Image 1 (cartoon, rainbow, N blue to C red):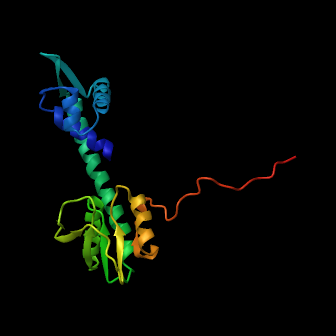
Image 2 (image 1 turned 135 degrees about the vertical axis):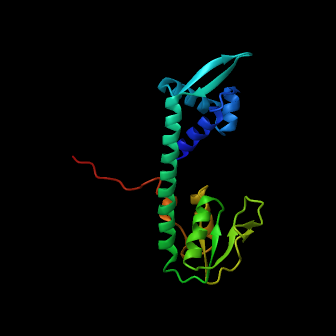
Length: 208
């Protein structure tokens, strides 16, 4: 899905056929110059875009009819994948919270995953106490208070991990501070509940 989004942003940047440097394109689609250059080469080769020389060593990149058709196809693909992602995450949150008897939930981390969790909790009429996020300056998120620190006493409340950035690191940090049963995680975050064994000690007898 990230690839599709980068390509859609690239098409949006060049579709007006304006003079653009690769540095300018990379800045506007929030990627490295190398990545922008790779996209340009890829789409030139496929005939999806064309390029014209402009004064002062500048270039005009523009879409071909095939490129415009490809953009429309990408939009549909992006929406379809987004809906699949949304439904999958929503289902996982519903499975996590539907039978849980906690008196309330803290959501750890703002962003798309958090938004889906909020919808699931609201649908199931579960109480959201607050959002925990150490990296945001927001005081409210979807009308819920945003706090910087983990509560000293959770009582009968639990934490749902909703950060897609550093989810594994956050999980290990949380479970050092509270009981593991207090931290809920959906499968799509692929969080390991314990650290892998990086140095297996099992030895095997050599066959003679």
